[in-house]
Amino acid sequence: MSVQVLFLCTGNSARSQMAEAFLREMGGEEFEVFSAGMEPKGIHPLTVKVMEEIGYDLSGHRSKGFQEFLGKQHFHYLITVCDDAEENCPRVWPGVNQRLHWSFEDPAAFVGGEADKLAKFRLVRDQIGEKIREWLDQLRSEASSTSEESGRSA
Image 1 (cartoon, rainbow, N blue to C red):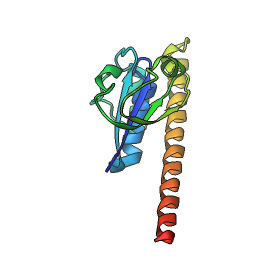
Image 2: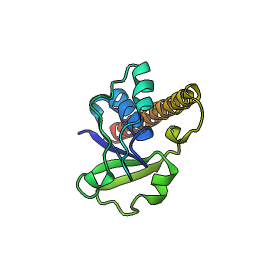
Image 3: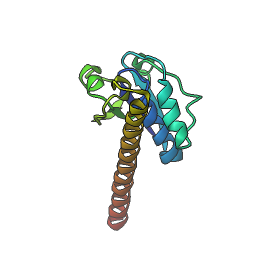
């Protein structure tokens, strides 16, 4: 059985798309991953660019609204990746086992020249990738401990 995860942010244009791509790749068959936004805006071109730089193809991704999923699908984890989504996401979400909040700065809101914007997108991308790696290590460690304990009690 796969673990179902929904990443949620404001526009589903950058952070949640990056998180979805990372977890799909790093989690493999263990995870079924989705992303959505409170107010979908389309995928930001710099999101596509910085993910391509590290070998991720987002061409099959699209920006989705949270209404596509609310009460229609079970999720083991609902993970908000921005403060706005955490504050404005429905508190009651039928079919969600656990809700997590990971706060990342919105690279699309950064004001500056093109090189500075690109640097901000890369920084946030790398922070999200690292958080996904840490979370997977934690989940796998917990699963390993649980299976060891159940093996000893059998």
